[in-house]
Image (cartoon, rainbow, N blue to C red; front, side, top):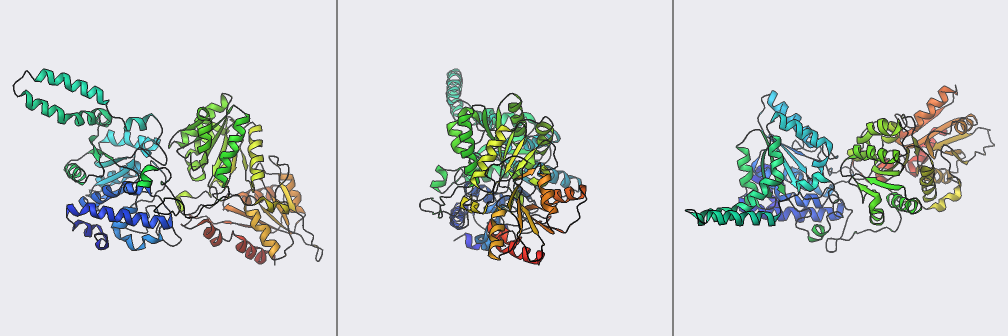
Length: 625
């Protein structure tokens, strides 16, 4: 087997060209087997196996810098650069990341997880090499989905203008997470109409047939049809911008790939090569369903079905279900997402309300201001984004949505600690950066009942609202026998879950929290038979200041527990409120530290930071006793 002997790019270079397809098959089998056990990004990685092999075969990483956009398609890169033996730990706690990590290898020169950033980073590396007189190519690999992102287009403009010495590989598989959206994507995948080319070739043939060497000329015309098609669309646009354009090249044909890159190496300046690949290549089930196998949990290789299926609702599913219910009652409701139709639970909504659904592609900034335009025209837009991607539209939230108090409803998925994808995908910052903005309402549900009540109240409220929720199942609302949520949710109203009945020393302890953390708090204090008053801040902004102040005034010690950053979180907001009202009492904030978070399951992350039931028990015992 070829793969057994590959521990570095130098080992790869020892292979004959004829052996590369065999290596590719072995790598694909290795990736499929591993991801079937660990979960991960399968389709995109299978699509770039051949391309990645050729790049490492012809270029010299890390002297030649490989920069992968998003970074989720780097599995072959990791295997070829010495991480094959650790590959079984993919996306596990203490294992290797599913994205580039500088701490893992000198071959990973950047750390990324979001789309459309590679060209700007590569442009910086290329300009630095120029200034420092450092040799070596700079090669950015970007998908056609990510190429539609605004940041990528800004970089394209800059790179072409300066004719910077670098290579851009446009990996064209017509997919990002789902099917690509928008006019730019259609353009990148366009080919000149075959009938038009055929008609033109017939007319030219008739003309040249009367000339000397007409037969030879006609043969050249036949061979040139593909070249005509390639030149007209989409290469001409990149040429007009100033790029030296090559392609399209079959991303699974080694002869084409090698000969094209060997030519490119001899040229300087801004070079762009379009490589057409098949997402899921080599695994028929994934080829037929690329969206499902973009990012997938452990699955059965024979059937493609998930190994573990849950009948429990996730908050993502609940979000889609709630918006469908609301849209059936109100024709002014529309839903927007940014290349996250499936992940945000909108697949069924998109089928039912085709005319009231907008997938704007990888364009979070645009999605928000687009929603503001809809809202200011009388519609009620729900913008459904992951917390980590909401960061990309921060200026639009402030400048476009909140200053005008636009009637936009944000559904923020993957808030809090996020499993498997590591530091680039955590949703721990949104409370800190949202709560400082005027005119915005922030809510955090515990169960299905209060989630749906929040959606209903969001629609009634005239202004920007946020409902934030974890990547987790919706917990059993039977737990509400503990009175965790109010029967009548109101924006801006906190809910007293229970009052302390401590009669021994007349001291009252209080715990303040929100979201699903409350379930674990209740379970923890019940297990240790601890007496405390508990307050549910179902609305995080505006805070129910009167209830909070009254609650704290009745307490001797206060513990605030939240699955968010301590810096700028709700604990900080309560301390600000206490300072403003000159309330001086012992307070402990148990929240997440100011750091970026490692790869692990959600359960493991909660355990590590003592935000699961057992960790909360420890914190309660240590602080109050």
